[in-house]
Image (cartoon, rainbow over all chains, first blue to last red; front, top):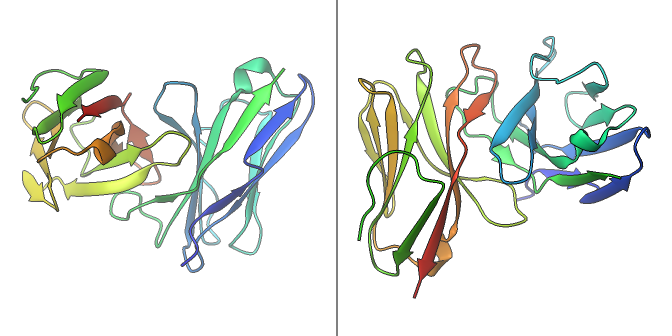
Length: 116
Length: 112
């Protein structure tokens, strides 16, 4: 079956531009997560969606970062006025239900963002 | 051979050896732990998980050990193969149960 897909796979942008990253979770998964992975580092949690509940935005590093999830499925992560320190791989994951503590998260291949 | 001890950023083993990758976690109240494998250019892939009411769990060629007293987690890979070469991350559930907190990762290199 289809896994988590993300687009684009690579994005190069200029400092100050806005970017949108897309995630298509596995069908039927109610929970969706965004993480960021800087070069050679572990994953850093950004935001979590579960059904129609208010998202957990506690990991977003600044107000330039936002995300939405439409219709409980596709999610878009938006970074406004990109900075060079935003360069990283942005990973999306989904799971069957919302509690990260008891359900395997399936990861997409990531979007590699480079800010020049 | 095996390598046991504190977290190491890299681990090199020979094909057929057993590998042990260690991880220290931060929150004594964490109730769920998971190991992921990440190959170059790919997203993390689930290996094995364990809940805090257990201290050992076995999968196919892999075993996870949990020592809650010292907040230590380890992944044992039996008969390591070249295809096991990757970065391995441990993760714990955050307090809200909304995300995983990942460790720094250990790069496992298997030579044949």
